Structure formats: structure tokens, C-alpha cells
Amino acid sequence: MTLVGKTVIVVGGGSGIGLGIAEAAFKDGAEVVIVGRSQEKLDRALLGLGNPAQVQAVVADAVDEVQIQRLFEMVGGFDHLISTAVWAAYQPVREFDIDEARRALDAKLIGPLMLVKHGVDRIRVGGSFTFTGGIAADRPGPRASVLAAANAGLSGLVRALALEIAPVRVNLISPGWVDTPIWDTIGGGNKDTILAQMASRLPVGRIGSPADIALAALFLMGSAFTTGETLNIDGGHRLV
Image (cartoon, rainbow, N blue to C red; front, side):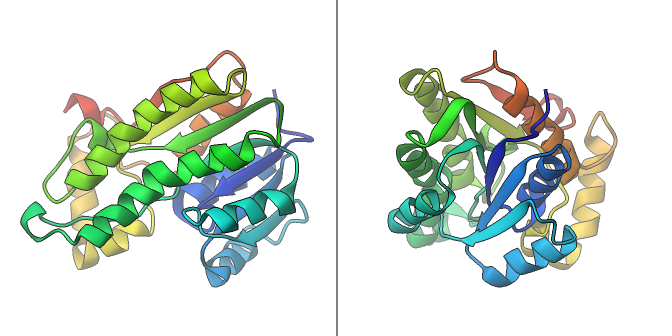
């Protein structure tokens, strides 16, 4: 099954995993809409993709309900939506900025809820929603308590939505460590060392790439018998 003739919305498609999914979808024949908060980042993404005619960009904040409504009014009918939106809230619990915690929960839980709320009546027969959680749900670490809770909560939300809006499918991808620009913020000047140390621990012997997660996204869009599932793409991280 290919995506030829399908419309795919990628929220968070301006960089990292979202951009990798957008590239894979348009190469598979889809009309792709990449969505993000920054026009500059979206413009760079389009340039990096070669400004293909079948990819358009829309500026919208995935936690702003008015902007989400406007997004769906602009796009109209669509077949699949994938959201990779995240707010990187890494802080020790004793020092946690509660506003940062709320932003992280909004990105992972409230955003997906609003995307389904306003998108479900526009999705075509056979369509799907796919969200992205993360390894922190299964292997939480220091300074990541809020993201661990948000990712674990998203798994429950996906299962509930899969029942409520059936036969529209709803699934979750849970990536492990993936080399994306967010690591420039998390790791700072130690990014390469941190990623190399994790790569040496993983059974597959390397860190993930956006292309690895894109393969999972293509599978979930095309697998008409898969819903309410969490697909772990983590290089065996949960085992070590």
C-alpha cells in the first residue's frame, strides 16, 4: 500500500523526526502538509526537501485551539495525521518550573486531544492518527519526570481514542534515542559523547535516525488492521 493520492498532515514537520516522516511520506506519493510554530524553520524544511510541489507548510501552534481549527479549515479533508510535537522539559524535580511542566503536558496530551477533536470529522475513510511518545515512558531518567508521565499518559489516551473514534485508527510510536536537533539543547556541547555512550549500550549498536521512525510511521499509516497500539522503535533500549 502506498500513499499515492493521500493527504498527510505532519505536526512538528519542520525538523527532526517530523521532517523525516514528511520526507518519507512525500517520496511515497503523498500530498504532505508540514505544520510548525516557526515560519523560518518550515521554510528551511521546504528548502531541504527541494521545495517539492506536493509539500506545503502551515504555521500553527499545536496547543492553540484556535490555530488548530484554522489549520483544518485550510487543509480540508485529509487521510492521515502524525504529530511529533514535544516540549523538552528536562529539569530536576526540586527545581522544576511548573509553567515548563504544563507546556510539556500540553504538547504531549492536550495537543493530541485537540488535533483529534477538530480533525476527526475531516478525516477520510481508512484514515489514521499517529502520535509520538518516547522511551521515557518505559525507562525514565533523572530530570525527565514530566516527560515520563506525559509519554505514559499519551499511551492511555491513544488506546481510549482508538475505541471512541473507531473505525478511524489511532496509534503511537515510542522512539528511543534519535539523533535530532533537540539533542543540541539537551546535550549541549556534550551531545556527541552522550549519544556515543548510549549507542555502545544498545543491542543495535547505534542511535536512531529520523528515517528509522519514518519507516514505522509509514507502516502505521498503511496497516489497516492496526489500532490502539504502541510501536516501540528504540534499538532495544527497553532491554538494557
